[in-house]
Image (cartoon, helix red, strand yellow):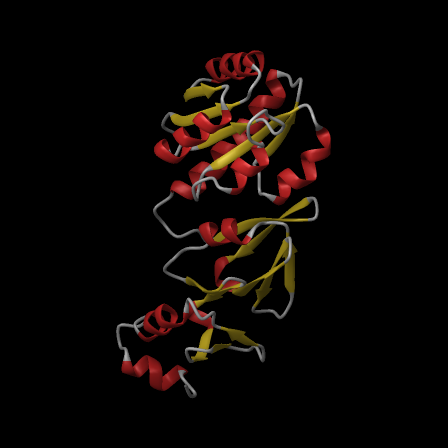
Amino acid sequence: MKEIRCIAIDDEPLALLVINQFCERKGGIDLMTFSEPRIGFEEIVRQKPDLVFLDIEMSSISGLQIAHTLPQGCCFIFTTAHAQYALEGFDLDAVDFLHKPFAYDRFERAVEKALRRIETLSKNTLPETIIVKQEYANVSIPIDELVYVKAMENYTKLFRTSGDHVLSRTSMKTMASMLPEKKFLRVHRSYIVSLEKVEHFSKHEIGMIGNKVSIPVGRRYADDVYRILRNSSEEGDTFLKKRQNGK
């Protein structure tokens, strides 16, 4: 794998020194460090690095705030002395949570996890499966088995063709970045649907194959959703005749 671009933000210079030394020892990492969080965040927005190391409790801005606004597809690892933030960190879909002081071996394991995620995101081919967190386990879901995704407060619920579902702490934003754009469509702030599983649709709701639940279409999404669904097949009119039961 090619060298990855990385940014570390921590208002403690000694902590940044440790990360820098560990990155040099690991190799293959082009690292920039920032002790001023706001400047570091501006650089993240500008450079869109592959990986970010984030402290949480900092003087001018919280690492949690930064994590909420990272560019899509940007992986991040929390590095903090405050273990009470671990659960919230995983809710934000952090790759890992390094509790200070951490040893090199623990740091290396976290970076290896990040490298695997970065490699998955960078592949040009459509992924056959996605991996999401359910409680404290990772669950692999074949793309073709996914019917739709629903946001539920701090969770997402993934509905499968078998009729069962997976309740995950993966955020809706992360879920949208994991799913291939050619196969899935955001139709509402709380819903993503599989284009291949759409049975009928209008500007107000969508019916899915083998599912009695009507998926609402958000007002801000309506025009784009209708246009994309009409054009999602090269045959256009044939697609509508076969799959649209009414407007």
